[in-house]
Structure formats: C-alpha cells, structure tokens
Image 1: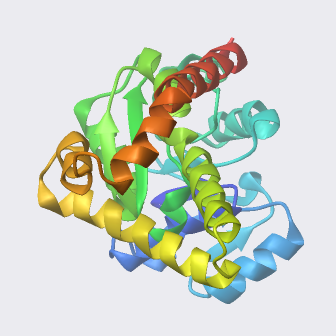
Image 2 (image 1 turned 180 degrees about the vertical axis):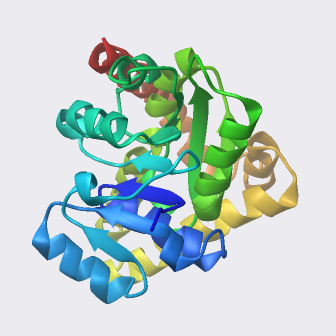
Length: 268
C-alpha cells in the first residue's frame, strides 16, 4: 500500500499536524503514515491516533510518485532523514526543521525534488498556529498549495521568500516565548500588588486571551485599541509611561533581531 502522506517524526509537531489533518478531513487515516523511532512515542501515537499506522523505519514505507513527506525531526537528525526520503523516492517534501534550508534537502536527492520550507510556531499544537512557507528551486504553485493545505489545518499560513524565514523565526517562531514572559511578569506584578496568585493568573490569562480575540475580530489596529484603553492622565497612561521610559518597545525590536540573527547563523 502506498501512502499519500508520510510524517517523519511523531513528536509534538508531527503529531499535532497529523491530528489537524484528520480533524479537517484532509486525508483518510489509511493514507497517512507516521515514522517515529521511539517506541514510547509510537505507543502514545497509537493511543491518540489509533487509525493511523506508525513505523519505526522510513525504509518500511511504501511510496509512489504522488507521495509527499513532512519532515518534523530535530535539526541534528534532518540530513539523515532527508537522505532516507531520497532513497524511498518521495515526490515532494515539506520541512518544518529550524535552520534547515531547501537547498540542503535538495542536495541529498539524486534529481530535482520539490521542497517547501516552513517556520511554524507552537500554537499549532492547539490548531491556532502561525506558519510561513517558502519554496525551493523546483517548487510549483501546486506544491505550495499542498504545503499550505497541511499547515492550514493547524492555523494560518503566509507565503514568503526563503530569505525572509529567519525574520519569521525571530518574530512569530519565537514570539510565544516573548508573550509568555510578559504574561509571567504580569502575574508576578499582580502578586506584588497584593493579589492572590490564582486571582492574578485568572485575570491575566483571561485578559490576554480576550485582548488577542478583540484584536483579531475588531478590525482595528493595535494602536487604536491601545488608545481606547488609555485615558489622558489616567491609570493606563501612567503604566504605559513607565514601559516607554524603560524602552520596552526597543527591547522587543532587539529581541526579534537577535533571534533572527541566531536563525541566520544556524542556517549557515
């Protein structure tokens, strides 16, 4: 039996993609194969996705000229996994491996292969991810549509050139960690003002979620929404003045720049 799609790596990202594809009916479970070397991880996949076959070895997979593969392994395993994909002869590859260029995947194949590189972020685990995709040397619009349909099952997708993926990594790829740090700090600030920690957590978490939803559905810019909360001479204005004096805006710019530069270094 030949599989429509092979996901190489059944960890958090690979399993989230599989669940997303099945949830939206992107494929029949029988057309999907997950390659995972860890026995413990395969057992967990069998529990969560009992209708999807798993295997410890890519060499056991049956493919044909239409089979696509999603590369979801760790960076130090990516080249060897790509070589195995070349050996079994998949038609195209979507790589979500950080710092692993399209050219590096293409180089291990004996002939032209369509490679799409992506930078998703961790909210794909709950179907709310933000991903960017970029095509390699031999990619067609159909290949990009295929990759977008996969990542679109777990969030929103934008198309960029590959040279912009390092900036994407520094921005949306790393952004959940930046936001979690802000949330963590706000909870601590509430505690410092005398609130019980659970009360502070409830208020911060709900406000974080509600503010994101308002930004998404209102159609207003963040500048307008911020102004709506900020009365002249009021409490919010006092707090914002401290943030501006402490150069929080500049720190965010520097954080994204540092993460993007680190991504460029990993890609070299």
